[in-house]
Length: 323
Image (cartoon, rainbow, N blue to C red; front, side):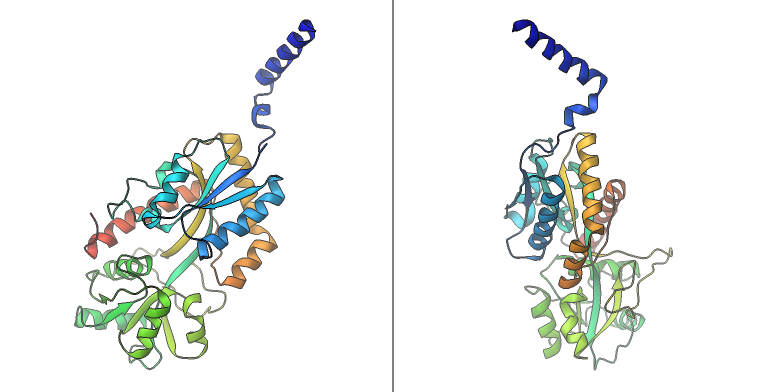
């Protein structure tokens, strides 16, 4: 018996040396936890759960979605970064990972993760009322340049993604980040209500959030800070900066693990995420919710996060909220 056990152990050892990939060939062997830094029922939670459902089909293991909220996203993002790098704890990281550090909330950045795939991007759009005398993005810039701070904008809280998208655009056009004064709101819906009531002149948010008002002819989208035309509103002009680069300014979501995931595990997960992104179930989900479909692989996602981190540092400084 001992001789057979010894031979079996020796065979396993030899196999591990000759075929090192077998060490993780069975991954995943048990359930996986997917951490969501935001509350149940929100957009990020919905994206995470459709990805989890598709993951289960592909990986043949249960995916447990866990909402870890608090600290303006810090708690959940920290939980993902602090997990064991074994592939059994992943998370959905969001645009806030490029903002929290500059706000003094945490030292976390995109460099603290193993990026796997960017799975969604909702581009920032800029709106005025349909009866506004301002008919184009250039006219809006001209008005802001002529009377800095006179016009008011809304769409989210102070320092939120839609505020910073507007500020980035102003700064890129050689204007102060507060050339259009920001009025904080609890989100795009109350901001758009304020626009309708005449309390503000401009709203910065995503096209889907204003879809009903666009369809009703009550608001006019002047600009989309995205690199491709919107599927539903293809005639909204895109923004190209002075260097000829088209922007992707807005809210995004991607899947990542803690830093140091084994290469073969990362490759398996990344390939699975690409298959999910291209699949009908995920694309139908994005279309039904009005979410933007934008994919980036591991290398592109890493570069994307670094670029966004740098641009947020400039925008947050421009509006006086960088620590």
